[in-house]
Structures are given as structure tokens and as C-alpha cells.
Image (cartoon, rainbow, N blue to C red; front, side, top):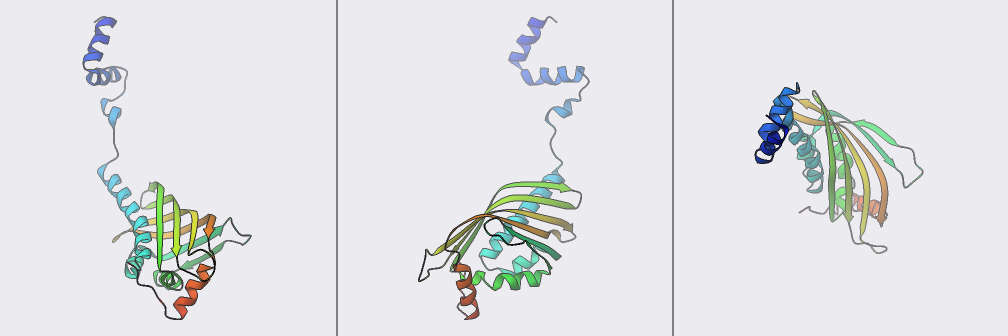
Amino acid sequence: MSIKAVRARIRQRPWPILVALLATAGLPAASVRSSPPAAALQDRAEIEEVVVGLANATDSRDWRGVEALLADQVDLEYRTLTRDTPPIRQRVSPAQFVVASQGTLPGFLHTQHLIGNIVIRVEGKRAEVVSQVWMSHYLPADQGPPYWNVAGTYRHDLVKTRSGWKISAMHVVILFETGNDRLQALAAERVRAGLIATAP
């Protein structure tokens, strides 16, 4: 077949011809449009659901839901680029994680954790998820605006267990803040006073 004839056939039905050309070049046709196995896609979907689910459960004050997404031990690291303070690192149980969250978050009228630009890496029964986060906190105050917004990056480490993927580590880096950062202390005071908002 002449080159002119091959070009004419490619224009008419390009895909079968391309597969044939790759096959003659020593490349398997399956490699042309190979896709991840269904199990790998399922893992990635479940991993993303866990990470986003933790944010949603926190904002809805579903503390049992929060605990269910965590491994038996969780390594936490909190760093901020907005203040000259050393990183905070600790290992906690799911119950301890919830107690710490309950010390401040219910004092806000509303919170919202938005996660995006999610990148997932899976190696066997372990996974790493890097994402961007925008954390909004709302509470009217006598002084300053009624909001405190925090932008940062997340890195979640997950492990696959018999009951599904669980978060085993959580690293937070705060990039910048806007609004009234005094609201955090005010929210904690409200919790201690029993003024706990009911999440929607």
C-alpha cells in the first residue's frame, strides 16, 4: 500500500489504522488507551471520600462520623507561616482528636472547610493526599469582622484497614489568614460557657 493510500485511510478511520501502526512498531495495541484497574479507581474514590468526609463531618459536628474516619492513632502536625511559632506535633487517638475539636469549633455559629486541588498517591495499602484548604469561621463579635478565614495546605496519610481507608496522619500548613483571628479565643470561651451552636 502506498503512503498516499495509508494517509487516505487514516483520514477515513484514524483509530484502527493508528492501532495497526503501533502494533507493527512493536507496541501492544492495549497500551494505546490503557486505564487503571477498577480496584485502583475504587481506592482513589474511597480515599477522596474519607478526606472530604472528615471536613464535612467536622462542619456538621458529626463527631461519631469524625472518629469513624480516623485510624487508631493519628499523627498531627500544625505549622503556620503567619506567625513565628514552632510546629505543633502530637499523636492522638480518635477520641482525643474529637475532644480537641469540640473545645473550639462548636463555639462558632458556622464553620466551612473547603478542600480542592486534590492529588492522591497510592502505594499498596497506604496513600498520601495533598490538597488546598480554605477554612471559614463565622461568629459575630463586639469588635472586628464576624469572620476568620484561613488558607492552607493539607497532607493526609491514610492506611487501608478491614473497615476501609482511615486517616493515620494529618499535616496542616497555614499560608495566610484574613479577618478577625480573635474569634478563635472567643469561640473557645463560648464552649466553656456552654454556648454551643447547633450546626446546620
